Amino acid sequence: MIQHPMEQQAMPAALDAAALQHLRAWTGRSEEVHDDITAAPLRGWSATLDRTDAPPRPGDAVPPLGHWLYFLPQAPQSELGADGHPRRGGFLPPVPLPRRMWAGGRLTWHADTPLRVGDAARRVSRIESVSHKSGRSGEMVFVLVKHEVHNARGLALTEEHDIVYRGAPLPGATPPAPQAAEPQAPWRRQIVPDPVLLFRYSALTFNGHRIHYDRRYVTEVEGYPGLVVHGPLIATLLVDLARRHVPGRLVRRFEFRAVRPTFDLHPFFVSGQPSADGRGVRLWAHDHEGWLTVQGALEFE
Image 1: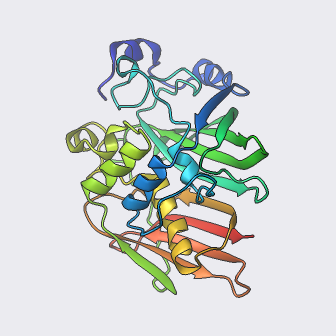
Image 2: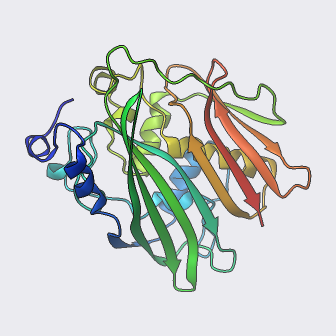
C-alpha cells in the first residue's frame, strides 16, 4: 500500500487490543455540516443517470438519494491520503486498513418536511459504533454513522451509513463464495459502467477515491481487477429503476447492502420485483456472470 508519510507514522502495523480501543474512542463523536440545496448538482445527476427530467426549480423536492450530492467533504488537496480520501483521524476513526468501502445503509424520508431546491439545510452526523471482525478473508472494521438532515421545516431524512475497512488480500486466501442472483425480474435495466460514468459520479459527489478512476492504483495497490463501481451509484440506480417504473410515487424507506464488488470491465444489471400490494419493491444488482452484487428494498408512502 502506498502511504502518505504522516499516515505511515499514525497507522499501527496490526489491530491489537490497544489499537481497537483507540478506534472505539471515536464512538459518539459528532459533526454538523451546512449546505444550500441548489439546482445545478441535480441537473448533473439527472444527466448522469440518463434521465429526461425537467430542470429542477426552486421549491421542487429533491429526489430520493439526491441528498448525497450535498454536505460533501472538501478537504484541501494537501490533506488527502494516498487513496484520494482525506487522511484518516478527523470525524471518522483512523482505521489502519487499506480498503475502505461504502457497505450499505438504511434511509427514512419524512414526507411532511422534504428537502427542496432552495433550502438552507444542515446535516448532523454521529459515530454510532466501531466494531471489529477477523476471519478467513482477514481483518475488517465496521463503522456505523447516523446522519440526520434538517431544513427550516424540520427533520427531512434519517440515514444509517455502513462503512467497512478491510485489509489487503491475504496470500492464498480463498475469496468468499459468490451468491447467484435471481435470474428473472419484471423490472430490469442493463448498465454500462464505463470510466465516463464513474468519473461523472465521482465529480458530482466530490469523491477523490482513486479506486473509481485510477486503474493503475486500483489494480497494483488495492489488488482489484478493474475500476470499482461506486456502491452509492448502484444504490442510486436501483432507486432510479423504481422511479422509472412508478413515476411520482414518494419513497418512504430504502435499505441496501453491498454483497460483492462491481467493476467497469463488463455491463451489469439492476432488477426489481414489486410486492403484490404495490407498497414496496425488492431490488438487486448482479454482474455479467449472474452473481449478486447489491441487494435492497424500497417502501413507498
